[in-house]
Amino acid sequence: MSTSPLRVAVVGGGIGGAATAHALLRRGMDVRLYEQAAALAEVGAGVAIQPNGVRMLRRLGLGDELNRSGAR
Image (cartoon, rainbow, N blue to C red):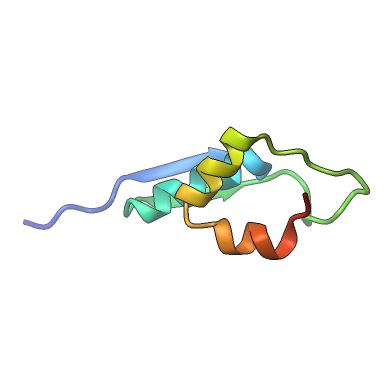
């Protein structure tokens, strides 16, 4: 008998919710990410990510994108 992947709902599409959803997807879970905003767009604000946060994003496989999109 095969088992279905664990189904998880993540509420909030900010950096924490998106990182959580990504990590769970990489572990084979069936993830649904819910965000109240109709569209995700720049709002004129920056995001500062401290060294420990950068390390975790790299562990999640997002290092290339961080290098492409981020700035020191």
